[in-house]
Structures are given as structure tokens and as C-alpha cells.
Length: 353
Image 1 (cartoon, rainbow, N blue to C red):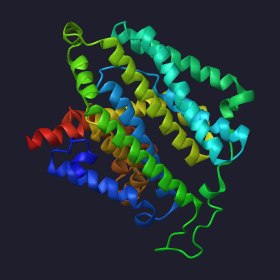
Image 2 (image 1 turned 120 degrees about the vertical axis):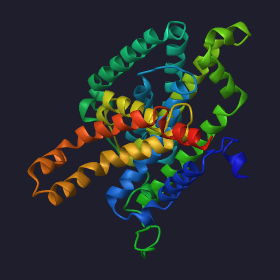
Image 3 (image 1 turned 90 degrees about the vertical axis):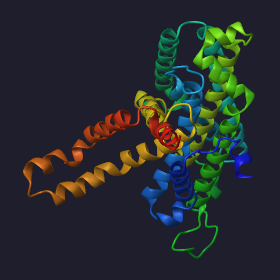
Image 4 (image 1 turned 60 degrees about the vertical axis):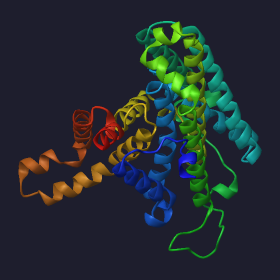
């Protein structure tokens, strides 16, 4: 049953299985295991970014396509949901049609980019996607009457997904069972379903053909596969998944703006998560997103504790000062690439072999 659910792609490493189970259990019971607003926000971001990073891995790791437009698709999904809720009111109908509209627009953009650009060499395709993504971000920022410009959009969501809605009056295990909890589990289960769909895709005949195209496009073309068709389809599928992740972020935050969806910093973060976790595995998206977001959220606090503990040693306390957390995040990334050149998942599977 488990093998069927995982589409036959089991972790193939005992330690990797344990790590994935820890992440799954932690996210499934996050509101009860780690009470507090910050912990819940972190868990929801991890769920959303697992889908986003896995969708990019579908493009980079399985298809060999380097794209810098992934945050554009992420933003299209988020703005689709945000605009629907902002214009039509906080109803489930608005939620559904906004999400579907965002996914459809993202698919059309990806189709256009794929058909016009995937025939060129990889570096030129990457430059095209970077130009398109930058132009789209400028367009969104200037259309302030529609998108809110740099300030973004604040909107209401259905009451059942807000803290004002009380599902149960009494606390359960010290946690309030309200709409915020319902919204979290909507994000969690939707993310799990989307991840399993992508896992099924990459382990289907289509996914195996994508790997063949990635490894040797000329040979795949020679034996009869339409390389451009497969790459374009992968681009569209990846864009749709990124757009759905953006819709989940829009529901969770109740705010959508360029800084939360379209910035180049997010694109770089996605690329780092894929590399840290391991390209071409999907499971790498789970570990990469979890480790990176935990580091982003808590590394500064841990460094503050370390600075206080070493206050008697001036040089050490200066090095671990909280304001230098980005420096140490970069050091951690360099070390992870040095010791895990094929990513965490690749290294664990190689060790098992």
C-alpha cells in the first residue's frame, strides 16, 4: 500500500526513511507538537515550499531545464486567488475559481515560453525566462489599481479559515481548534496531495522519458521522442504546480505582494533548496525546504543564544552575533555542497548502495 502511494519510488535508504518520517509527523502534528504562532507559520511555509521546490525539481532535476521564471508562476497563482477574493468576496466559490484561473494563466504563460524558447540552447532559455520574469514583476508593481503595486493586496478569506471561527470551544491538548488550524490542515493536505501527484508523474513512463531527454536529448530525438513536446509539457506541469503552491500561500497569508511571491531572492532560495536536498529526487525537496526554512527562521535566534553564552570570549561572540546569521547561512550552504555534492538524498542513497 505504501509503495503504491509512493508510486514505487521508495526512499531506498534507512536513514532517509527516518528523516522523511520525522518531517511528515512533525508537519502533520505541528500545531500540537510545537504550539505557538511562529511555529505554525514556519510549518505552513515548509509545506508550501515543499510543493514549490518539488515543482522546480521537476523542471531542473528531471528535465534538465534551467528556468528563472518559477517565481512568476508562483506569483500568478497567488495573485489569481488574491484578486478573486478581493473582487468577489470571501467565498469558497471565489477561492476555487481564483485558484483555477491562476493555474490556467500560469499554464498558458509556460506554454508560450516553452514553445518559443525551448528550441534554443539552455543558457539562452535561462536568459529568456529571467527577462520574462523581471518584466512580469515590473508589470505587477506598476498595475497598482489592480494588484496594489508594491504594497500588495490584503483581502478576506472564508470565515471558517480565520482565527475568529471556533470549531471547538475548549482547547484540545492546549491548542485552540479554530479556523487558523483548519487553514493549516488545508495547506498540509493539499501540499501532500500535490507532492504525491508529482511523485507519480516522475515515476511514470512520461517521467522516465524526461530523464532520457535530460541525459541525452540528441539520442532521445534520434530514437523518435519529440524532445520539445516533452520539455514543454514538463514546463507547463511545473508551472501549474508552482501556481497552486502560490494559491496556498495566498490563502494562508491573506496577503499577496511582489516581495512574498515574485522577488529574485525567492528564486535563489528555491534553487538552493533543490541543490541542498538533491536534484532529480523530489524527496530532496522535502529535506531541502525543511532545513532551509528552519535555518532562515531560527538560525538568528540560535546565534543570539550562542553570542550570550560566549560573551566572555570577545572574538567568538562577535563572530556568532545574530546580525551575522546570513554569513553563517552561506557557510552552511557551502559545507552542504562540499560534503553532499549530489544533495542530501543523493548522498544517503549512495551510502546505502
